[in-house]
Length: 89
Image (cartoon, rainbow, N blue to C red; front, side):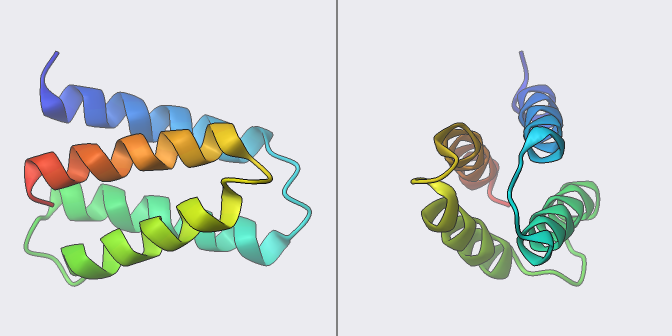
């Protein structure tokens, strides 16, 4: 499986996990949705407006935020962070 295909699979799993979560905080859900959209856009247009450093920092922050309350989500986000790093995104 190519990195891009695996990345698409991880993004899809992450979207599904976010939709299934009972986060209890709509602002947190909106931030996650926005982050996923920005990551997808960054993959499609690597030279776009959102910097890779900004995305990585936002993703790391989200991982820390959810690792205690939603460990599955944190694992998926960490997997995504590793894949993005390997691709240079």
